[in-house]
Image (cartoon, rainbow, N blue to C red; front, side, top):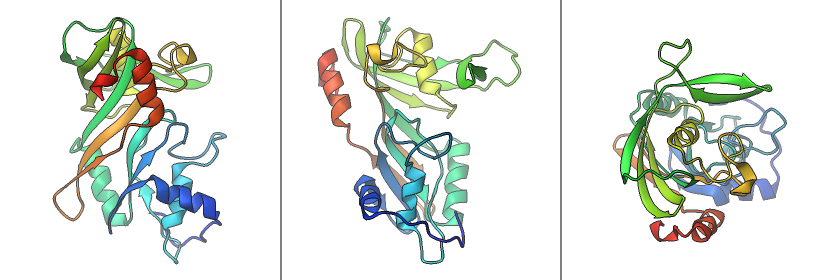
Amino acid sequence: MTRNRDIPSLSAEAAALARSLLIHEDAAVLAFNKPSGMASQGGGGVGQSLDDLLWAFAKSNGKRPRLVHRLDLGTSGVIIAARTQPAAAFLSAAFAGRDTQKTYLALVKGKIPQAEHGVIDAALVKVEEGGRPRMILAREGRKGAQSARTGWKILARNGDQALMQLSPETGRMHQIRVHLMSLGCPILGDGLYGEGQATGARVMLHAARLEVPHPEGGTLALEAPVPDDFRQAAARAGVQAGL
C-alpha cells in the first residue's frame, strides 16, 4: 500500500484504460485482465505499467492499491491488487503459502507428450546470460535451486502443436515457460525459451483463472476471457476446439 503521497497526474485516457481492464472490484480487492505487452510494474525502460494505472483508484490522501503478484510482460490474464494494507498482507501470505489455485492456458509446439496429463517436478535456478536473467533446470544440490511443480493437461492437439492447461503449484519466475521447454514443447512466441516470433507474435500464455482466499472470508474465483490474438493463434494451430 502506497501511503500519503501526492497523486500523480493520470490522463483521462489512462484512467479509462485502467477501468476497462477491471474484472472485479470490492472494498479489499481489485482484479484486472492484463493485456499482453503491458508490464506489471515499471522500471528498466518499461513504458506505462499496470502498477502506474493503479493511481486511478487512489484515495484523496494518496493511498492506493498494491499488486500482490506479477505476470510476465507477454503473459495476459488475471492479476490482482489489494486496496488496503491488511488485505495486501493477507493476500501476499496466501500466495507465499500456496493457498491459491492458478490456471493458465498455453499454445505450444514441439514434441507433444503422448499422455493427456501429468506433472513436471523440476527445480529451477536463476542465472544471468548477457545481462538478462533467466531460469534453467537445476541439478540436484545446486546452490540457489528452488523446487518447482507444474501440473499439465492437453486440451487439444494437432500434430506438433497443442493447447495445454497448466496448474503451477509453485510460483517461480518463468516457471511454466521453462517447464514446457523441458518437456520438449515450448510456448509459441517465447523468445527466451522457444523460437520467438518464428512461432508467435508474443508469448502465447494466458492466466485464465485464479482462486484466492478473500481477506474478508470465503474464496474469490476470478476468470479472464481468452484474448482475440490467443484465440486466433489457436485457430491457426488447429487447436481452437479446446477453447
